[in-house]
Image 1 (tube, rainbow, N blue to C red):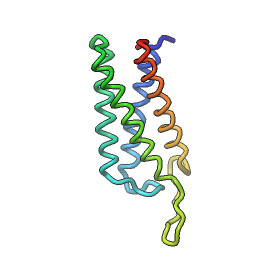
Image 2: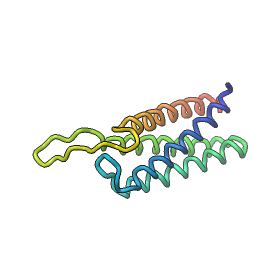
Image 3: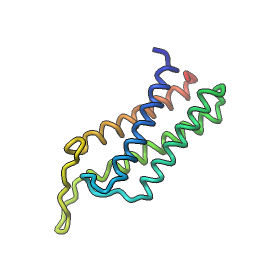
Image 4: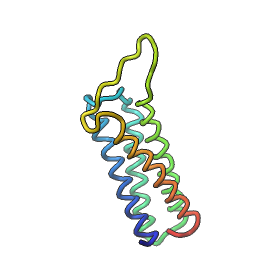
Length: 134
């Protein structure tokens, strides 16, 4: 598999993570503590922008400044996703509420796989970009 093919696969998986996060957390019945609409909207808009800039980079001749912008947006996206993932950390205290179960995965596992995988994928894309492989 070439680096170009792997980059396309990672871009598509990144888009899936962004859209599933939006669909899953946009509903009021998610099992974890709610995520504020601000960070969710920022995650969605930044993720779609990162995907769009990445498409321009891949399809329009690999212009280095466009690629650097795409990598930067994906890094911000990975950080935002990990911040959203923090909602699963247990809270201890007198007024803390117990987390309910999640309909999709019975816990945070889908979110962990998606967002840690996104962070690893972004790291690979950044490394390949800096090395001139994509």
